[in-house]
Length: 548
Image (cartoon, rainbow, N blue to C red):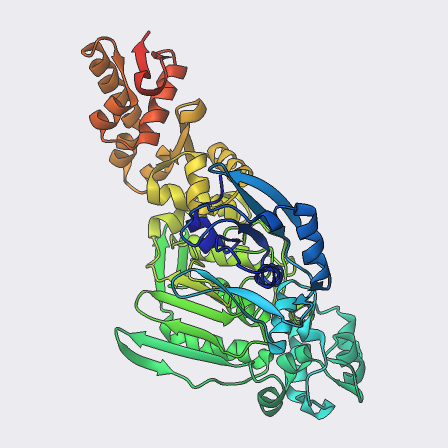
């Protein structure tokens, strides 16, 4: 079966429209190679109707050779003859190219989504080449000589502040002992240009003068906005500063709009802001470090009644998405800029700054960082404003004091999910968090051993919940009893129903009896089957569970 139309439009991977000419086929192949690759189907109409491919295009070897000869650099594609609804369809699998591809006629094309979600083929202009290559990590724009720049564009005072940051992060760094010229060369703040030494793009971004940034890197700006209801309280014009000054400036703008909340319980006494300071710092650094400087637009900070939104031009680089941010290998669109910021202590040395964003958001009982509004041209992060949950904060603080170390981000994810949803299986945790199961299993087992989490049931029906110790600390033992006693009451109700129903019950019966979803009712019956209370009989419509 061919993929559904929804998957094609949402994932932007394949095309159902049937090109009418050989040139259209090549145009679509080139556009796919210059974006994310995918599969082009010949013999399928716009509405999904299969009409069959023409005889001329059924020669798969000849079609592959034709595409190879009509593309520059030459593309090797995989062409397959398929059968759909009894009619021939040709699938052309196109990989994402690590180079910019054109047709032999000189057309450079790309694919994008229209407003209605349908893909279209449009020109790719030379100014967009840098963005595309940077997204693939095959070109580091930040390491290039800054256009029209001279050595006088580097601000000596900003350099001193960079040195101080390095001293704070690593007092023993050999960079602190060298003169300015060697310092600039060692960090590649200065590189060889067409006319001799000149600042790199990264050099200007980190310690360049405001005037030089506006001239040579006009995209290096930021905007800070605050909205109360529909009324703007702060709305800056785009402003330019070197990053050694930009990051403190953003922090100062944010401070009045990030109030603290005092939490006191026993030996725990902390002041927690609406948005964790360390998480905010990492968010700000990431926005400037990983943005696309070849694309015009400012890094935007918006504070409103709901929370904080940070957006920066340039989508996720290839291989990263909102679904794998926590587990993918750290990657940067601007490796040289990231290296400088890491040396100066702005960037987390392991490259796992996103862990701190999640940990900072969750440790006070907040919501998961939300990247769902991100697009191919922009990364958007939303942090919801949540008043810290005092009981949750105290639980985390006490456990970290007992361990003598911070809880892992995986443990915080598990505890946050159980706090919100009460009882979950590992599969459900995986669904809610998009974290791979092995990470969650390791965290759950550690939390069970520490006594913060309890397991309920066994086998496929195994669930987890916060322990009696946690509920007792929060004076919520009745809630714990309700959660813990749920299994026994459900078992008795299902058994009683089966006794009055000829000795058997179906999953549908259990759904209606206990007001459960299908998956919850299924897991309950599977657990009772595993415990020897019921045995499964039949299949399909006649499937049922009989009392043993």
